[in-house]
Image (tube, rainbow, N blue to C red; front, side, top):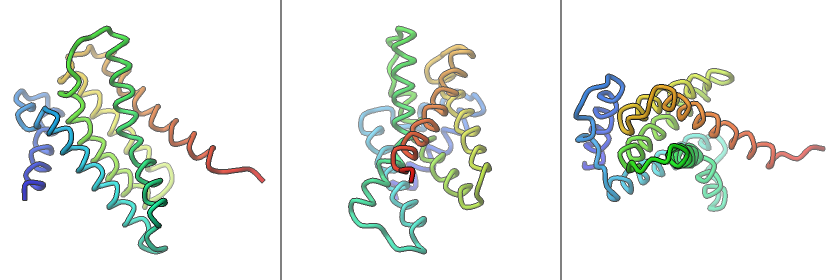
Length: 177
């Protein structure tokens, strides 16, 4: 049941982040082991989404699952790329684990929320992007002590990168006739 307590602590930690309460760091394991745990939970959620999405057509083969996992990992890729590039742009030496570990939990929630909204269909999915942007803004403010402008830019760029990468993959994989 360590998985459930880890998820529960992440939820409590995120509630504290959104409210701006101190002590949120104690809810996350800010270490390499905590990062690995967050990534494993993210991978499990992505695999679960693949299984749910393919219930009516059957589970894809090994390559299909792998390709789907790569596509579903784009939120984490966007988070890491934007986090590192913003940090480098600011010439900051601040550690990234305090933002990366909770950020991966946020991207896990984003993945689940976006999947549920996708079942409704259409533009409702943009609501997940707005929620992810707000969560990333709050995270940058608390975990990295970035200014309001830098935090907002970080959040917007992360969401834009996520959307752009998905759009680029869509365009690459669909050929015109």
